[in-house]
Image 1 (tube, rainbow, N blue to C red):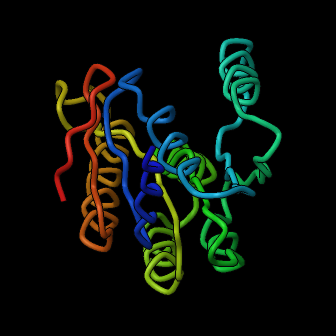
Image 2: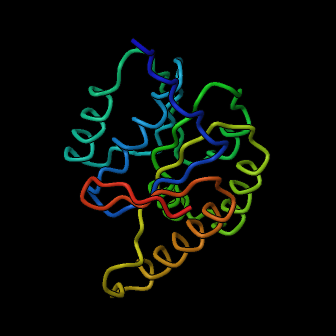
Image 3: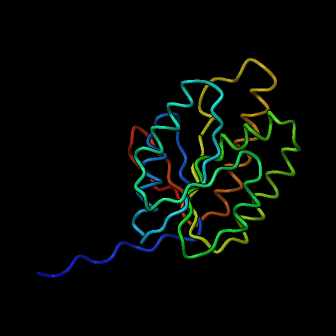
Length: 177
């Protein structure tokens, strides 16, 4: 019997995009776990209510013990700069991080530029998850429109930098780059 070939190595930077409940996180986790552990999971969510607390608990429960979880709500670029290759890092997610930055009334353009600089300098492998927020209706308020626009710009900048970009729809991956 011929042994199965090893899984392909993770690229330096992979971006996994998709809508809500499209399977982004599960797919990103599956990509990372093709590499040998340990794996680093960077969580950016804040639990402001019971529903979000439950979502975070579900994410934690499905991850095996080989995951080291780091949490950051604002200083994602600093955390990326500490990443030690070849340990795979999963960032879940850029959307919640950007929301945190905006709600904290920080300079969004500067924070995004700092993150892009950190990702560009990282040796990887890094898998970043982000929501594609530009496919729906135009939001009815200025804050939501500013968020949608900032998220779109951030996704474009990360995608331009990424070695691989995957769009998730209904749990199915579509490789864009």
